[in-house]
Image 1 (cartoon, rainbow, N blue to C red):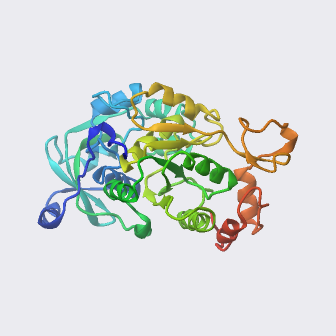
Image 2 (image 1 turned 30 degrees about the horizontal axis):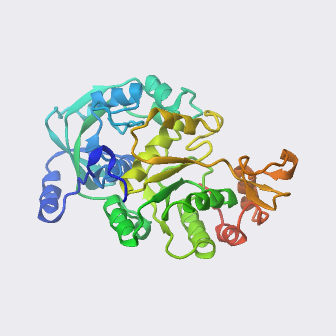
Image 3 (image 1 turned 90 degrees about the horizontal axis):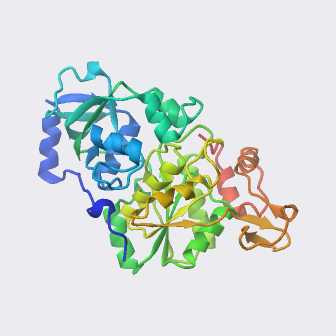
Length: 381
């Protein structure tokens, strides 16, 4: 059986039919707040239930509880603040209880019922969420550039930002039906913002050995400079699935969700999102959602001990490497040989080789995948 939605109910805050048409018309006469693409993506994830049980941007009580306790005010596990920022001069005609229209790139995206407007401490936010105030951390840098006030309240989606990957996009209502149609009772979800190398494939197949299906769900959205471009990630995974997976054991779907690079907290956040899609298990990677050396390699594993009530089973599979004596991919748990016999897969080295148009050795990356990547003039953001 697919997992129950987080908080017990799958949120769906999407206006349809005549109601949507009416709200679009009414939005033209409302106070307008212009938002960026990242907030538009957050709106989609709220509206379509990826962020269930959230029905809008966080009010102060939820926001403070998430910072301090990694739970919503009602004690539901939640680790990443989902907020809308604004400057005071954008809100001079807005009061709590008002409805405003949220616009992206000149088009209405959502109607928001203002419940609360409140101030926040950016340094405290960064310290709590990212465990650092170093502006070199991409999440901290973004936090410090945000506006002075936060606006909380329920939303109703009336539009979407253009999506180049619409044909690969599935929402929780759709994946839940799909998993049931396939007869999958257990589903392992894999979160990624990278192209697949043999270590990723090893971990995915290890999870697939004791679940009915694998849900590969790469993030499409803002990522830091130097990450792989969205198109490259999708095409690389299509190649992997075509050549190296049996038919009908994998679902590939893109998810528009912004990376925060919040390490352990974001690992739990990613698990909650995949729980809402219907996954029963979630693969937690080494240095999951990490960046630089801000987090310990397996710190994202430890945080799950604080959430026995999460409702999705984390899968902790050790980093895979190639062992010359074993003659294949293995892990520290299954390989008895010394470090001299082990070849670690370095993402940095892979990037360098691919950027130079070189095919990595087959014990690091499937040649078909490497060929797919180097077809792009520049596969990196």
